[in-house]
Image 1 (cartoon, rainbow, N blue to C red):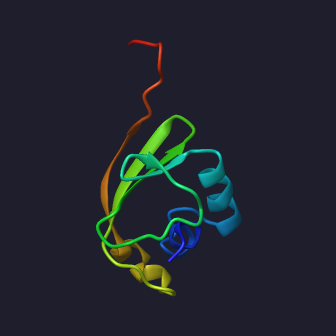
Image 2 (cartoon, rainbow, N blue to C red; image 1 turned 45 degrees about the vertical axis):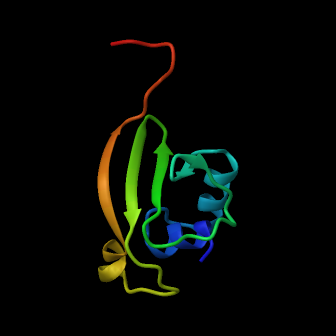
Length: 91
C-alpha cells in the first residue's frame, strides 16, 4: 500500500492530500530515510512524521486497505512522540 494511503487509512494524518504534501516536503521518514508518497509500506517499517515542532514515530504492524475507525490504531505501534530536534539550538 502507498505511504500516503496508509497514513490516511491508519488515521495518522486526516487527509490523503495532506499526507502526500507532507511526504513531498520531506516531513515523513520511513526507516530513517525520506520517503515519497508512493513508497510501498510493509509490516515492520518504522515511520517518523514531523508535525511542526513535534515528531511522532510508529512501527507498522498490519497493512489493510480499509479499516474501521475503532481499529485504526491497531495498524501501528506507537514508539513515542518527542519534540523535534532543531539544529543549531541548545537548551
